[in-house]
Length: 501
Image (tube, rainbow, N blue to C red; front, side, top):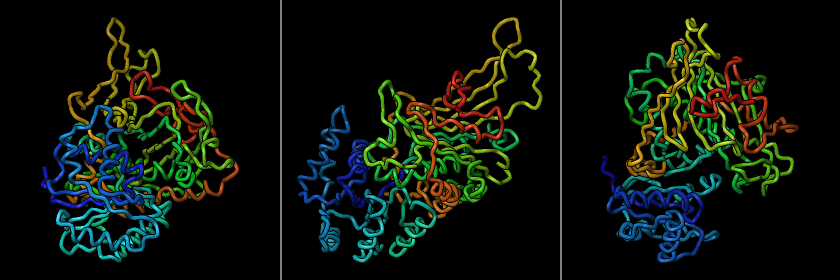
C-alpha cells in the first residue's frame, strides 16, 4: 500500500450530480476504510452561496440518500472535519482570487492540490484558464493535478483544440483524464487475466481466435439527459471511450512493466493498428439504431423521440455496433465487434472471445446438433465473472457431447466491493496514471470513429429503430464476417445461440 501525501481536493461542481452520486460517496467510503491521508481536506466549489455548515449539511444529506443502511457516525465525524466550502457564483470576477487566498492562507490546507472538474466539459477550458491566470496550477511549493471527465471533445479536431487549451497552463503529467469504466474491478482483471496466467498466451492470436465481442447494454434510457445525449449519441458516449479501452486491453502486447507509461504505450500501439474505415466502407463496418417504445421489466417505456428535450426529427443513435480489424502480427484478420445500446433487454457488460473450430471434426458423426466452439467470457457488470465453455461427453453408452461452462467467478461474497471512483481517486492522489488516458490514446480512438461520425452526420433521412426491451435493431448481422457468427447475449451455455437480428 502506497503512502499518500496530504492534499486538498477541490471539487468544481460540488453540488452537481457527479459529485452527489459518485465523488462524495466514494470519498466517504475511503474514509470508512481509513484510506484517506490524515491531513487531506475536501474543498467544495460551486455556484451556491453556502456557508461551511450548510455545505456539511448538504454532504450529510447526500450520504444519507446514498447509503440506505445508514451512515457510519464515527467515520462521518472524521469526514466532516475535512469539509470546506468556497462559493463560486456566476458574475463574481474575484471568485478565483478569493480561492487563491483561501488555499494560500488556510493552515489546514496542504500545498498539494487536486482540482476535479465535476462540471460540463464545455466549462473545462474557462475554469482551467482562470486557475492558470491566478497561478494556481504552478507546482512551486507542492504538486498540482487536474482531473477531467469524458467526453474529451466530440471529434478529433475538438479533442485537439481542448488539449491546446489545457496545455496553456498544464503539462501532460498534471492531467488525469478519467474514464471510470477503467476503474471497474473486472476491467483491471483483464490485465491480470492476460499477464498473470501463461495458460492462454500461446492461444491469444489469430491462429486460434475466431473473433472478439465487446458489449455494453443498458435497460435505462437517456434519463433526462437529452441536452447531453443529443450532442453525443452512443458512438461517442460509449464506444469511442469505454469500449475502445477494453479492446486495447484485450489486444495489447505485454508491456515492459505495469508502470503507467509502459501500459499506455502498448494500448496506443493497438489503437494505431486499427484499420482505418473509409467513408465508402462505413456501412460495412458500422450500424446504428434508435429505440422506440416498448417494455422494460414488464413496464411500458416511451421511445427516444418522446423523451423530454429530444428533437422530433432526431437521428441521434442510441445503439451503435462496429466491426474493427487490428492490422498487426497477432490479430491480422480477426474481427473485433463492439456494440452498445440504451433500452436494451438487459444491463450487461462483457467481453466474449470465440475460438476457432478444430481443423478436423473427428466427432462429426456423433453430434446431435451442430458443434459448439469454445468461448472465454469476462463479465464486467452486473456480475464480475470469468467463464470458459468447452465440450464434454454426455454420460451414457453413446459418444455424444454437450457444452459445459467452467465458472471461475473470482468475487467472493465475503469480499467488500468498491465503486470505480474509490480506486481512481486514490490513484490521482498517489500520482498513478495507469488507469487514466494519455492524449495520444484519446486522439487515436477518435481517428478510428471519425469517418463514421461524418457519414452518419450527413445521412439524416433515416435511422433504424428497435423496440425498447429488445437486443437492438434488425440487420446487424451484416457486420459479421461469416454465417456462423452471432451476437452473444448471455454468459450461460443456454444463451450461446441467441441470434441477434
